[in-house]
Amino acid sequence: MENTFWTALGASLLAALVTAVGIYTIRHFEAWGRRYSIYFICFAAGVLISVSFLHIIPKSFELSPRAPMFLLTGFLLMHLFNRFITAFVCERGPNPSYGIGLVPMLGIGLHSFIDGFVYSITFTVSIFTGVLAATGMVLHEFPEGIITYLLLLRGGFSEKTALILAIIAASLSTPLGMLVSWPFISQIDKPLLGILLSLSAGALVYVGATHLLPQAEKERRRYSLCALAAGILVAVLIVLSK
Image 1 (cartoon, rainbow, N blue to C red):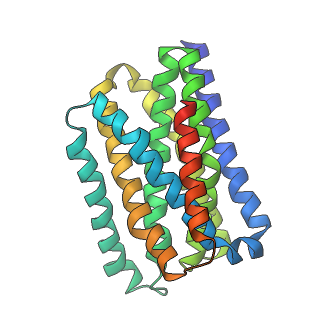
Image 2 (cartoon, helix red, strand yellow):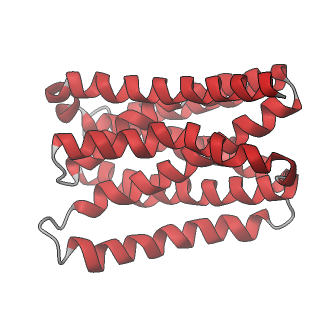
């Protein structure tokens, strides 16, 4: 069991590292990233929405009969959070665009945190199962880190603040989720995992459909549809690799 713990922790730290590399890469080439950020937004929308519909939602429905209700709950909670951010942070704060970065950051952060639960559970089943799950999960960490950082910048946050928030939400949340869930691993049964996955999927669908795609509609760039299609293709490959 001790070896399983360290293996699961190592996999979650690898996922965090991949995300951090994505954030570091886009920060190192920030001028280029800002210029083409709309393409990253379209790509991320394709990945997040497609992975949710093709894998996370079907899996959550398979695990729990109450998953549809919590899928709706996750979507509505993100909507209410967006309303709260708009009313009490953006309109009363120094920058009315903060919500562009904060809402996706929360959705991606929640998803990454629950990813940590998945690492705990799959590696407890077997090392082989954990490796298979980790392979698919790590693939989508890189673009998640990039888009979290870029959206925080577009929301008006400073480079330093955007970097710190992106690292916490998209990177560190995964090993944190693994460490938090490990002591309760025997109590996290399939129905509970299905509920957690459906909440995560509701949040990701909200982020992709109501924040990322509308941003793409505002800035209709020549190859934005190609970027969206590339995101969908990557999502399909992620799902096929599981």
